[in-house]
Amino acid sequence: MERIPILKIGRLLLVSIQVDMHDRLAIALQDDLTERIALTGANGVIIDISALEMVDSFIGRMLSNIAGMSKLLGADTVVAGMRPSVAITLVELGLSLKGVRTALSLERAIELLGIADPESEPADGAQD
Amino acid sequence: MTSKLAGVLERHEAAILSDWLAQQAADAKSRGKTFQEGEHRQHSSALLKAIREALASGAEANVFTAAWENVREILSGISRGRARQGHTPIETATFVFSLKRPLFDRLRGEYSNDAAGLAEETWAINEILDQLGLITFDAFSKGREEVISRQQQEMLELSTPVIQIWDGILALPLIGTLDSGRTQVVMESLLQQIVQTGSTIAIIDITGVPTVDTLVAQYLLKTIAAARLMGADCIVSGVRPQIAQTIVHLGVELGDVSTRATLADAFRIALSQQGKTVTKVNPGKAAVR
Image 1 (cartoon, rainbow over the protein chains, first blue to last red):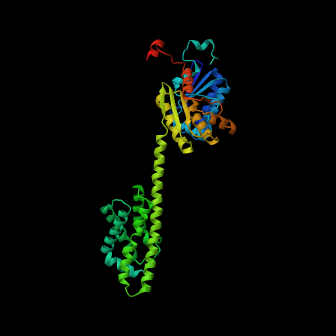
Image 2 (image 1 turned 60 degrees about the vertical axis):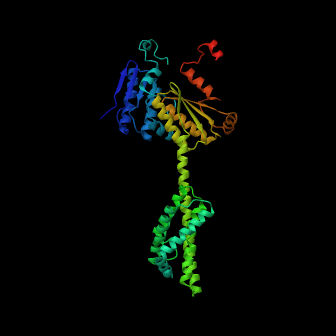
Image 3 (image 1 turned 90 degrees about the vertical axis):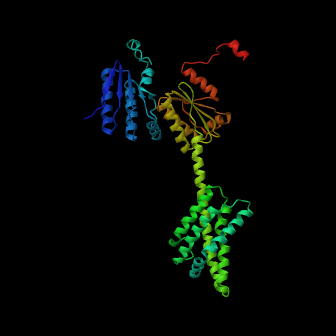
């Protein structure tokens, strides 16, 4: 079964959704990601959805849920690169990803998590 | 019953047409308008021909039946065209009604010694032309509505500019009332600009929005939520004292959206969020200029 790869960079996990999300894929991602966060003790998660062109209510809710779960597991979560059409759809669906941080691009997301500089990261990862 | 009318039209079509055109020219002149012979001749002859054909096929005096479809179509086309060209309703309706006189003249000649027949035919033609007048007016208003809706669309596009006022800072001055259609346009153009310019802050200026009620606030919040999903923060500026009062009185919940009274204030915050500040290059020189 196809899965969305989760890349580990230091204490950061990067999920880049490059294919059309369908329901099973989203559920698999939810399982995989939560497990990986618990396993690696990651303190930052970036979900890059710049290639995602369409969302329905289920995928929208899954995105919101996945982001919420990784936050619960203690990882700062940033959803990066949302397209305008996806943003409008989510707002119309009433899903505004409360409590989840957002960034315009992957680069900005890394900046936002404050781990662009690898030197500062191992000393005190908890800081914002 | 209308068979004789059909015959009259058939025999005198050219004469009726020229009488009708003369009548239209006179009407136009009395209103001080120029009369475009070519266009009117074309319209008139097309309509007259259609009426003749409808009557010849034995149609009843009810123009809303199938036999009159061609006539209705031609007349609607003409009326709608005139609405677009800015003719007045009176001018457009007179076009049809001015056909009465030439027709009555011909009929009078035909029924010179049959008063009852003349009255009946006159009534029939009167009824037909009145109904055609109604169709004219209906098509005319529809034509005007089309013009209005097109203008609305144009205004919508004109009134939602998104401007980049600094690196990474967008301004969106809203003028006029927000409704759902407009919110959609505003949202789309704002998000598009956020992507294009890579901006992280958008200032929504509502100085030009006359009132903010719960609905407008909801639209504003929607736009802000969408921008936030893209990773851009929004600042609402141009909140006038009355609007601040209305918002509080209505109990509108704006959440954690930062608001400011003026665009300048909002801009200052935006700059400071980016860690920038505006200073004078050379205080001494600036004073001289």
